[in-house]
Amino acid sequence: MNGLILRMLAGRVAVALITLLIAAIVIFFATALLPGDVAEILLGQAATPEAVAGLRTAMHLDQPAALRFLLWLGHLAIGDLGTSYVNGTPISELIGGRLMNSLKLAGIAAAVSVPVALSLGIGAAILRGTVYDRLISTATIAVISVPEFMVATTAVIVFAVYLGWLPALSMTRDVSTLSGLLKAFAMPVITLSFVISAQMIRMTRAAVIETLNAPYVEMALLKGASRWRMVLHHALPNALGPIVNAVALSLSYLLGGVLVVETIFNYPGIAKLMLDAVSTRDLPLIQSCAMIFCAGYLVLITLADLIAILSNPRLRQS
Image (cartoon, rainbow, N blue to C red; front, top):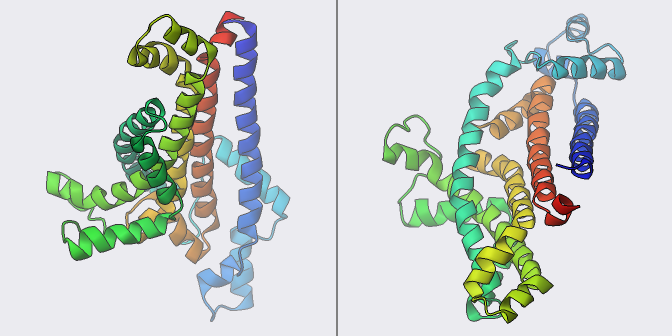
């Protein structure tokens, strides 16, 4: 691995860390601007001013915002997420199980959507201009134009109300059987797969078409290579970077999609936990959940950039 690639990899990682720091600043001060006094909300309307002042002191809310941010960032750097304002429970305990639930949901949705989207996107690129390509392109544009909550609502109406195949809410109490697994994940996975597959299909199609238009692909055709051999042995290896970027960018939509999906289907994930924390003004819990979402997004985007750099034949040969 040459020095240019190492410098580019280090630069991408450094940009990701700086972006995460900026995100931490925005998250901390944005949550501080939430309406309402946390101490008054926790104690209720009947609380005396002395009790409110005492609770604010106990939670260090009387300190300057800059000092509170530095203390929070220092604890965050060593893995200490703090303690919930509402019940005094360590935030790591509150997030642990919920985070695993969200990762399971995201993993199943990715396992379903990625193979389907890549197959449809590559097929549309190979058969560009045909009826199949136009049908896939029209369907993806239609799905992208529909917001997540509309897809979720339509899924509930079709599969739960009219057909009666699946429950309207996610049943996570029993996932040891196939029926229990379907009840827990079917509706959320259907919704998320629709949302991320459409974007992935369009980006994959564009990446493969760009590669197919390259001069070396045309040269392979002139030498007598079959169309499928040209795609499998010449185009796809060189389109790996753009395709990985398409997959990573599409999967990053999971982070926004789960906010809607977990709320509509009452799925016990980290997004639902963060929304509940907003209603109770549990600032440390809101900040920790938001940082997890930001870190997950940056990890996906950074991995896509690193793979794109490592798979670039020009950089490997320079």
